Image 1 (spheres, helix red, strand yellow):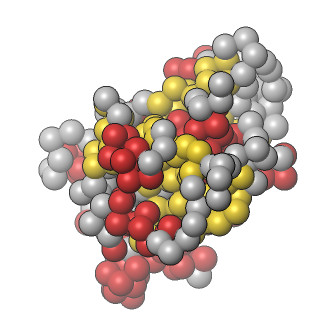
Image 2: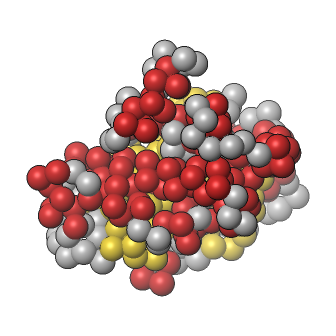
Image 3: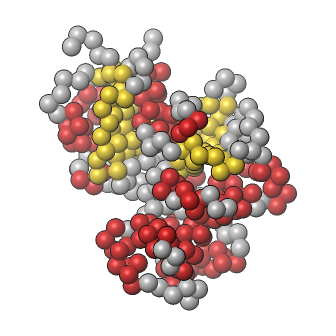
Length: 328
């Protein structure tokens, strides 16, 4: 192959990592695979499994990684890896970039068709800033800054900001978690790793709902997110209460983000959890919490709110980033 016409993109998370090869001209995905992050000691080992034996030559690479990126290095928040741009350059023998995973996803949003979104609230779309919030293994947040012609994704670590309760039950939840954590962040209550478990054990331990040995047994095997979703669908009271509280907390923080970014262009809900609990998000609890901001209720009622259904958004955004930053 005499000319590199391919882009490598990655979306590295604490649980799963998506890798893809894209046509450099059209951003068409040519090969996309998903790996369990904990099955590999580092990203180069995973790349070897993805690319091994193939003749692909990359024009450029971009990896979206779940954590702050400083000097081209991302130490994954919920994984032992460090993803380094200089190491990727050597391994792949091409220009390589490391950006925050929410920045990658934010870059991909404008490339999606409307069919890749489920609108919880159509609102009144306006030209201006937007925002992205994504609960998965952790909780990511990103501003989509409107520069006058396009949205520029500005990453943050807002998911680690201090959790603030909205009612007496959530105040009790905060006090309960203070018994374990010196600092209680939003990620402790809205994420796959922590949120479902913390809400469930709070409801059980404070006598607000009866615990379920069957749910806890399933959670030991597959995690609290899967267990709560399974038993909530069956109508188990503590599972339903856990899911409803999780959805309300998700909506409350999404509303906070909309206010902080003046997201007149919309709030997008990303991450792996939202599409899996879409029936619960559409029942109204998310939006009730989203708009419950006192004098700014009317403003938030006008903000479009959409769930991203395409799980390859971050890959597409990373590929687009690599293309834009290597074009002459």
